[in-house]
Length: 324
Length: 259
Image 1 (cartoon, rainbow over the protein chains, first blue to last red):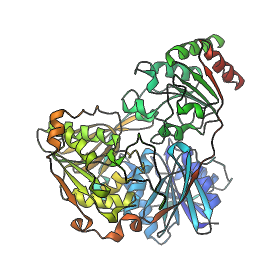
Image 2: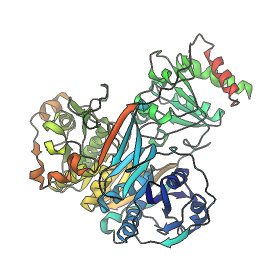
Image 3: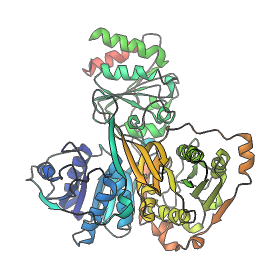
Image 4: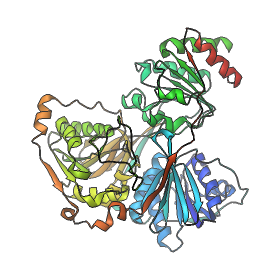
């Protein structure tokens, strides 16, 4: 084994660990002899002991219920307590989520260690762990490593590994405290708002239909949503139309956004800037519709249609409806 | 209300990116421009200062070679002044080292609010603003899509997977904004002319009381070992739409048993 002990940050929703965390527990088993998890949640995280144990964690550090606080400072405080206790992990694996990125930033300063983010693979070397990164829309691959003291903090993109159960027993639950946070822990959530969302989640969908600048107007995005719904998929977007304010950031596929690996990815009016390609070129099949024959999206497409999305999409939608 | 906006000056994203062969980091020797991601933070800060009926917006940036062209863009939008930390020893600084430098620079302004982008377009590490908040001992709210300030309290709509949360904290605080949440103003001709004479305070590491060993490539504790070409995905069938091209897409989806 490349390292002795790895700590995996496990984020959960409704008492279930996020797939991104289960992916990291799976990978942790192949780089370390000992795998621990840390989690938090309403009523405490002990209910996750069976699930994280089943993916190979021997111990589960339970931060408890963080109440209305943003988790970042609280969980980072708890991890820095574990590091200071003398039971320090050599590697800390953190998934790329809204809350976990906060944890990584806070933790980095608390224990004065750098972070390596946007990791898509980890390799065990003679000198420890190396991280792999996709650059420039996936045209180049960089390998990096830490040169300073452990623990090494890696923030890993979702879908980098396939989650696989170990069949292990429930993890031993160990309560941990965040310590004194002062003003850093002052941010509190006063209410939650769920925007209308139907169908599967963007990063879990079997089919993703995304729209880009070629749609021309915000209103034309409705075609993307309709096609996604017909195919029981999720609707995504390029950065250009998120920046333009047409759709919220949560829909963004790409380097600054989500990584998706659906069975089919349908890019509508997307040129395929490197920013976008890095988030979707792992799709099993890619269909592209774009009027510019020179658009880079066609270099990764299995089926590329050179045409106007306003002509092609309505016909495509009608043809699929006719088959239903 | 005094607001600091962290602004990153990056290689022009429209130009082909280049890797510095010596250390495997992004080449930053050419002309730099303001990261588009920061234009939303600048706009947000200008609006908040206007609503508060006073105070000014100060830019804080770190860049090689005393580069100011990106800062002038934000000054032309309406920021009052800028602090630029530029020092040879900073080359190769990672996110934590950058946050340490920015924390010292921000400390000179003593702002009520610090605004930054969620992540930069070039390096997209995405941790620097939160590291900055921790170094300053401030709360932080990331992924903001709307911000308001009243009675010394910051209220933010924070992006979530399914919608947004309303999140509050006291000032001073750090907030990061996602792109597309406001429409950044275009600098007026008057603004561009005025920006030329706005103060840009250029500082070195020693001005900030930082040691060269804490920053730059030596202080960053990580290195790039190799950069190689990735295996290319084979390109497939390209058809020019003659009015019936959608049929090929339907057929492809049928082959995959999706329709």
